[in-house]
Length: 292
Image 1 (cartoon, rainbow, N blue to C red):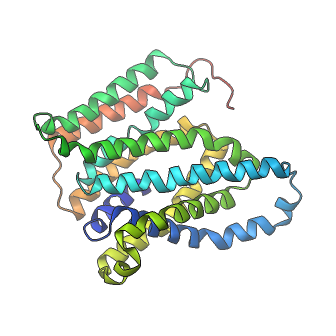
Image 2: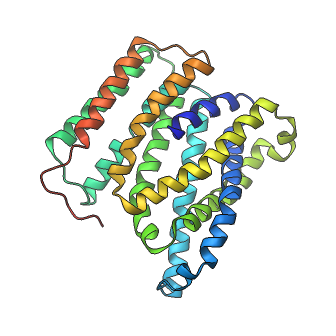
Image 3: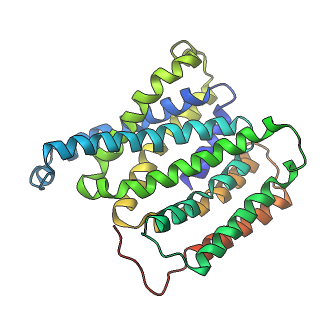
């Protein structure tokens, strides 16, 4: 639900805030919200008495977590913000709802999920739902009309990869510091790239509405992604990402209520197909592979 609300809030902001700048400000605020709690967690007795990996391993882990943070919080959101400049909030949410199914496919490829008939059927059904949502554009010959859809699809692929790869690090380290460090890595990655958008000079020109949207996105992202990583620490990526099925419903309703975006019959059909696909794809198999 937080992701769907953030998509709509981003849609309010992208008219005057460039994609890289919005992503950087989003996670700078999120990092600021998590920093006091991360510092407390690192200095606590519980953390200090927990067996720690060797120094060399910790350095490699930091590099890996920084790369995952840049992917999850930098590249993903920048692609999503770029897509929202070209397509509506509900349509972006529909495409982004492929996230859990892409996670299932990747986890199955790595041997962490068993490929079953319901899984395959769910994947095909959800792809059909996305095709239905894009059907009004199928007859458009201009290639430029597809950049928004491709960007959001790329964001979903990036998130699926990061969600599967996060688990070993979340099991070795406390969740709050990992969340804060991942966001800090993304901010350090995005800040120089966003210089091309002249963000130091432009931030003073943003309207009150844009700043309200940025503040909401930043604070909710700090809270939301902490719980996201906490869930990834204790559950398999499949069982966590399946809850993104709530994302398109939230975005569609808020996009209609706040942005004046219509609820087309094709969008409602697509929502039903994707919901059915997620239900099929995440039905528990008769035997589970142990989580890695």
